[in-house]
Length: 456
Image (cartoon, rainbow, N blue to C red; front, side, top):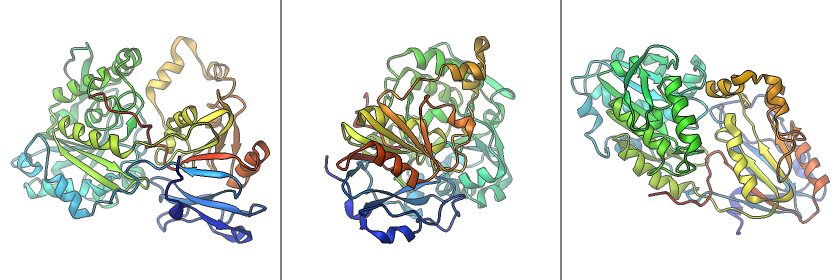
């Protein structure tokens, strides 16, 4: 497999590495980040990986010995052009399967616009102002435009987190609220798969309903976005549990990139139709969370158009039988275990898997369904610890994070090693591997997926 984009990622360095600073943006200081990293004896090859999504999107330098064969595995669309504000606006104004938003909004009194939470990398702040712009052009008053967090069974958003998702201006101009999975719900129907659908009552009371979502691979729904903004986004916990447990967990049609014949996704689509969503915006991103694709319009048709592009854009070749595989949890660090699939595909037996989780919130994603599962039948916290895997199946698992706390660390298999800085990572890797080690680096594993074709 050829090394990808070497001139962009690599530079040969010697003793000067000892004083080289980590690279970052001006948006965040990188809490706890080191100012410098030490030099490797014999020189090193360095590459830069993105970290800290929603917290400045900082680039960090990581080093490997010069004698190692390091392969950076880029996704197919890594060089896709970033859309300008005017280009994003044009795509919002050019919908698929429905009339333009400002036409739909004409004469409407109450509008709700949903957005996902920080567990998703969606740069909603690049699109939300343009959606609001269309609503204002239709004559909707600012006080009648309501933004709603659509994060299913995750925890509520706090004010600073909403600003990170929507930008600083939107929350100051328009009100926002959190969805509630337990209360204030309206029953809207039962799907053909016997799922009883209850949706947020405020969402259902709006005269115009708009959703904004990001498109990335999902473990059982194919891709995120589309009808997922409704189920699980603004649905009742029992509605979500039926979809995730009864349908998704027991159906072979579900899985990564499976979209068109996916029973769990089809159940979500029925729920979205019951909810009468008027307009939807789907966003594709590059490896630094920049917008490279926008598909607006009908919540199903726009989503289908987006995933056809996503399947070409995010697909990534697999380097087989690597001695070391580095999977960077960015830009979904709080659910970084999604990156573990790259180890199963890419790592040789007895190799070392390095999972990078560089994010101030660590792996803090709360999921009420998981809490229900862990508590069922008297399964306590201590029972969970006893049922942890004995070890990582293919070899040694090494976690690099300056932020993980013990309550997150105990979730990994027994024998997992942890490093607070990259110097410690290299020391452990050099102790385990020879001078000719073969390395695969997946620089933004949170959105990359294998070369899998769509199901329709």
